Image (tube, one colour):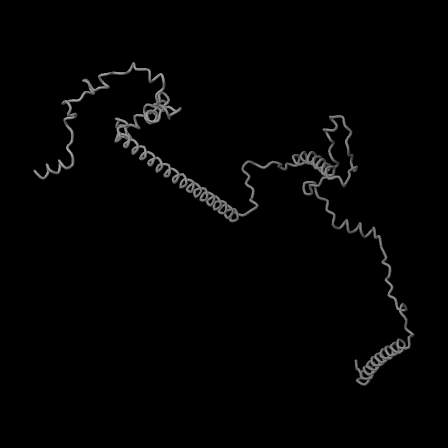
Length: 318
């Protein structure tokens, strides 16, 4: 087959000329539109885009064909699907009440009624599915030696365990610190009590010594100290309850100050006491004999101490 080059060149030139002419026509058309717009010939609303109405097709045969393509007739064991109605309300039936809801008569806005309907439907499904599963030999109970895989890994559980142990250790440390603080407070309290007790014992000892020095008492029980306390504690706490009468301190104060009442004018004479001479003793009053008599005649006491000047003379002589 022979192709003439001249004919090919002429065809190409015509195509180029056709493209140029189309571009010129487009340019001319744009120019014309601009002129028409400038003159006011183009008005709004003349060029309106119109959407084409969508055509709906109900291809029943095609739908059936698609359904047949992906439908698989599998046994129930592979599907495990159940379609059933809710079980009867046994409680309302036993009590003689009319069930408040029938199949399909459920208020969707009532949460309790809706959830109860779901519960009864699930109950009916279980009652129908368990016999079918046992019929096909499918186990519905977990064996005794079955170990299920944990939802969390062992590493995660170890982290949780460490965290719990650390929290427990922190709590134990805080409890120990609290107990130590309480023990320190209690120790300080005991120490203060011991110091106060020693001071009290010391004060009692000094008081007893002063009384003994003044001749107010002839007992030396305060010198025994802890031995006496041990004896008292062995005798029991009821010893103080069995004591009768006031103590030595009370007796001394009663002897010194009396038992209360009027103190002034206690030794004043009255008419009765002035006339009462029953207690008068002439020997005692005039110092004749007896204990009140003078020894050695008019000289008075024999052991009279010499005066200061006499003592000085006696010292100078010696």
